[in-house]
Length: 404
Image: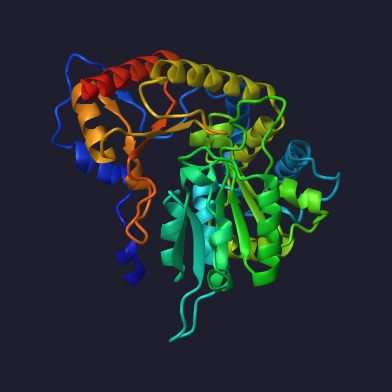
């Protein structure tokens, strides 16, 4: 077996199950899960219709590159969404459909990381801390070493990139970004992205921007910028060293469709396509055709944001003055500070109120004696509005009981 498998830590939800396994929550309270970030809003009916209308494609082997109409729909969407000059994002060179960002993030790391020679230090895969655990696992299994950058409140819950030494940048092979962040909801400013691109040029590493929450934001008149936006402002029309990951899971409430894309540097994507050809992960044609319909429509995405906006407004009004928590820049998580340690808070909240959240320390790694997720919990506002309101009321009552 691959020795790197021994380096993988239990997934946060395995830790959560162990934490809550012996706890008996109140039987007279309906369970409310704010733990798993699985969208619960209704999937667009027109996407299901497109899927069912093309079931004859079950008899067709899909290609890894994907069909031209899907790559064109993705290219057009990126151009509109991120203000790219027309024609700069070539659908034949700069776009690759994938089966959701989770699979793609892992596979991308295997393709990009260059294994070190015997006796040499392994390359670094740098990620925010807290982070999506795929970044870490993919690094270990690619023969790289994860390097964690704490996301602290004093830096707006973004890494302090200016504090990273040249020695670390020199060893970096992939810099993972997540904007809006999971779990913090923090956005990385476009000026920061430009500085990171300059560092990538100087030290020759790849920026892999996980932007799967990019379409969940609050100001309809001010969509958040992404890595492609920074490239456009720099006139970097070859997107060199820059790759973005997007998905229909959160944007369109289609987590079960397993549909997303990778876009950016054509040379990197050419090699990644070769890897994927052997990896055996082509998206079914009927799924691709359904995805075309989703990427071509924005009305359902705006309606989706409206639902989240309503839930954030209601929940934050209930928790105001009770729990230290603020509206994020984007995404569907609240990153709340707890009045007691995060594991105890999570366990006791479940025991008394039958509400499940995730301890922040489970989403982070301790570095130099500090775990940046400790003393916080992640709450996913994915349940229906009534359930989110009920959960907020129970959390409010629980926190007040701690203060009594």
